[in-house]
Every structure is written in C-alpha cells, then in structure tokens.
Image (cartoon, helix red, strand yellow):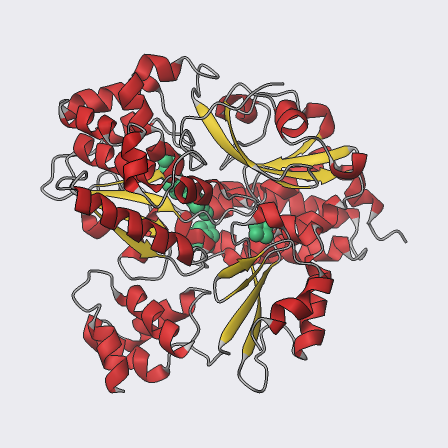
Amino acid sequence: MANIKDIIARFSEKPGGLIEAYHALQKKYNYIPAEAIKEAAKIFGVSEAQAYGVATFYSYLSVKPRGKYIIRICESAPCHIAGADEVIKAFESELGIKTGETTPDGKFTFELTECVGQCQGSVVVTINGRPYLDVTPEKVPAILAEYS
Amino acid sequence: MIKEMRIVLRNADKIDPQNISDYIAAGGYKALEKARNMKPEDIISEVKKSNLRGRGGAGFNAGLKWSFVPQSETKYVVCNLDEGEPGTYKDRTIVEKDPHTLLEGMAICGHAIGSNKGFIYCRGEYPYIVEHLNHAIAQAKEEGVLGEFDIEVRMGGGAYVCGEETALIESIEGHRGEPRFKPPFPGVEGLWQKPTVVNNVETLANLPEIITRGAEWYSSIGSSTYPGTKVLTLSGDIVNKICIEVPTDTTIREVIYEFGGGIRGGKKLKAVQIGGTSGAFIPASMIDIPIDFDSMRNAGFTLGTGAVFVMDETRDIVDVVTRIAKFFEHESCGKCNPCREGTFRCYEIMKKINQGRASSDDLEKLQLLGRVMSKACLCGLGQAAPGPILTTLQHFRHEYERKLFLS
Ligand SMILES: Cc1cc2nc3c(=O)[nH]c(=O)nc-3n(C[C@H](O)[C@H](O)[C@H](O)COP(=O)(O)O)c2cc1C
Ligand code: SF4
Ligand code: FES
C-alpha cells in the first residue's frame, strides 16, 4: 500500500497526472489494483467513480490482474488480410488459453488489439509493447520461447 | 522512374536521430532562429500563405488556424501523435527518423502563437517513441536550442477516439477521452480552458523548411490547393510496404505501381482504401486521381492520414468491411447515441451479410443507417465510420449481393 501511495504521489503535482500515475502503477503491478483507484481518487481530488471511469476507458489500462507478459495481436484490416486469424489460433493452442485470458501460471495474457502502427510488417504482435513483425503461425513457438 | 520529394523526411536515414549534433550539422534549429527574429504575425502570415494544410486528416490551413488564437497569458501547442488510424505509421516514422524536426516545428508554432509550453500526445502503443522523444527533448534542453519553450510528452492509453483533438485534450487533462462539443474550438478554449493549437506531427514537421525556404517555394510544390508533399504509408497486398513522401499531385496509380512496386504475386488490384480505416474503398478503375485532399474529396474519397491499404483481386470486400465495422463498434466512445448504437448495428448487419444470412432489405437498412450516422454523430469517428460501408455499397455492390440469403 505504501508503495501504491508513493507511485501515485509522484504525479500528484502534475496537471492531468492521473493517467500517468495509472501507467506507472500498471508498469509495476501489470494492472491497477482496486485500492490504487481509491487512493488515486483521494490524491487527485476526484470521485472514486470518476477515477474508475478513467481506468476502464483506456484499453491499455486494466483493472483486472494480468500476466507478466501481455501479448497483443493486431486484428485491424491490414493484419486481418495478412492472416491474423491463423496466428491467433497458433497462440491460443501454444498457450492453451483463449483471447482475453491469462495462463494459469500468471505468465502470459493474450489479447486482441487494433492497429499498433507497424503495418509494414503485418501480421504484427506486441509483447509488453515490443513489436514482432511478419508473424506467421510457424514463428509463434520461437517467439514464446524468448520468454521462457 | 518518378522520385520521392522529401521535406518532412529530408534527414531520414541520413542522420543519427539519437544525436542532436547530427541534426544541427544538417542545418537544424536554424529555422527556429530565423523565426525568433520574425514578428509572430509575420510567421503566421507566411505559414498561411504557404497554404500548408493539416496533415492529420481535416486539411485545415495551419496558419489560418493559428490566427484564430486570442490573446491570453497561457496558451498551448499540442502535437497529435496518437496515430491510431489502422494502416498508418507515418508519424511514428517521422519521429523515429528525425525527432528534432518535430521539436523545432513545435517551437516555431510556439513562437508564432506566443506559447512557451508544448505537449506531445503519443499513443500508448509507442512506448519506445516516448523514450526516443524524451531523449531528444533532453538533448535539446542541454543545447539550449529550444530557449524558453518547454515540451512534455504524455502517453495515451490505447483509445482510437483520443486522436480527435478535443478527446485528446480531455485525455491530457486526465479524464476519459470523450470528445467535447464544438464550438468552442480548441484554438479558443482548449487544454485547461486555455487557447490551444492542436496539429498533427507531419504538419508541424513541415514548418522548419517552410520558414527556411519561404511560403512561395512551398506553395509551388504539388497540387495548387493542397501544396507540398504527403507522407504515405503502404500496406496490404503491395510489393513494397513502405513509407514514402511524394508531391501532392502524384496519382494513386503512381503510388501503387511506381513506388509500391505493384500488387504482390503478380495479381490484379481490386480496391485500395486510402486515408485509414474510415476511408473510402476506391475501385481499380478510379486510381488515376491525384492524392491531394481536394481531388480526392471531389471524387468522393478521402486523403485522411495518407494510409494506402491495397487489396488484390482475391480479397473478400464484405469480409474486410465487416472487420472494419467491428473496429468502430469497439472504438466508439459511447458518448452519443447515433454512434454508440449505430456502430453496433452496422457491425451486426455486416456480420449477418458476411455470414450469408441477410436479405436485400438489410442492405437498404445499412445504407440508411450509414447516412444518418454521417450526419447525426457528434464527432468525426461516428461521422466517418459508415464511409467504408457506403463506398463499397456504391462500388462493390455485387460483392454484397453475392452473399445475400436467397430463398
Ligand atoms: C476519431 C478521430 C481520430 C483522429 N485521430 C487523429 C490522429 O491520430 N492524429 C491526428 O493528427 N489527427 C487525428 N484526428 C484529427 C484531429 O482531430 C485534428 O483535426 C488534427 O490533429 C489537427 O491537426 P492538423 O490540422 O495538423 O491536421 C482524428 C480525428 C478524429 C475524428
Ligand atoms: S461519434 Fe462516437 S466516438 Fe464520437 S462522441 Fe459520439 S459516440 Fe463518441
Ligand atoms: S494493421 Fe496491424 S499493425 Fe497496423
């Protein structure tokens, strides 16, 4: 808890710092814990409902616990026609989970996303923000092996 | 072979973007020095005369936008680096290859409107760009080239609508990124109610060269009503998936076949969607149009962000449009009813068509719904969302009819 307070307090003087604080919290915990939202509401002088509303508006922020590594696959049109569906299936079967789920060991969360701005390399996957380009189903095991 | 013309990307791959001395050695920050010796109103009129029009999609004259900014003690310059438009990666490329061109452009804008505080709103998908920019800003501060002008980078959270300027402002203020009613426009009442100029990365990155070489030089390049160059990003079934910068009188055909190297696998072109995911689908028979804003608009198309998404003859238009309809259903912020409900229904009907369960009645409903949305939605997201549906119903109706449930 002290930790949560410290993180949020770093941004308390910054106008509009709530989202920055959430980014920092998420970097540390992989999600934004409920008590952090309460704390943030107090520090930034908004209602808890407002603080929660902000946390749930942005797809990058999560109020639910997630894995250590967030795998996101782009399914926007350029990646879609390049074969994103096949790559999604490959990740699901390698990880043994469906999109939106986290592996039981808490290591990987697998999510769908829209364009991440690397469309020269469709199909694009990001893991904790790092892009992987021209991903095919065959490449999936090797990508995951980097995190083992 | 036609060549690119590089203004915004003039230093790309020629200098080390991590090293400010490279940029300075290439003549960098000279334009800002020149601008500082000019009267603010003279900079504004020079930019106005250059006819530089916003590269973020709306095509509004940048100098004119600045001229509306009223007197106020505090004003802000906001750079829109949200770049959420699928198929678009130009702003990332510009910043990756030459971040100081952007910083210099922002400082020029700051001097012109009398602001000493700039924000760059960078999308959450680009954490490495945030670091890259912070590094460049730190170097610029150390060198003292920005003078009194301070620049801060803020990171978005993965919401497409935050690219809309008033939603972006809400987001910097720490709120949900929901668009505001306009007017008042941000130029008059923006960030923390202060006058705020919001410009796209590419717009701002054009400024140093415009100041250095003058309005006359700039306005003589490319098409007369939308002069200069446009940075385009090619994606889809094209040989060269690259980022290029070309004069605005370049045609779509030249973009695809000269710069893009044509269609992959020797296939034929079926359609090209320009301007991002809300852009029109342009049939292969209509690609001899220059890419400039007005030529595109007069033909019923959009230049938008300059994304060029190419589909070959084997692609299923209805399937792609269904995917796009899902995008808008997901990204609608929900503030206004026509969009919240409309994008949901568009996706629902598109799925029905794509799965072969629809009748011609559904096509009529879809068309009516699209027309209502383009008029009744609060912001550009909802207004533009039906674009792909309406233009494919116009140019590719047979693809829809082929999938209708016949009984
Ligand atoms: C839904 C939506 C998303 C937008 N996304 C962006 C974006 O990612 N980048 C951008 O520069 N402009 C975007 N715009 C346009 C901005 O609202 C604004 O017009 C632009 O930043 C102004 O800059 P410019 O005049 O330099 O083009 C978007 C507009 C809408 C309606
Ligand atoms: S048009 Fe859509 S995105 Fe724009 S304000 Fe309305 S609901 Fe939100
Ligand atoms: S469409 Fe997938 S990264 Fe842009």
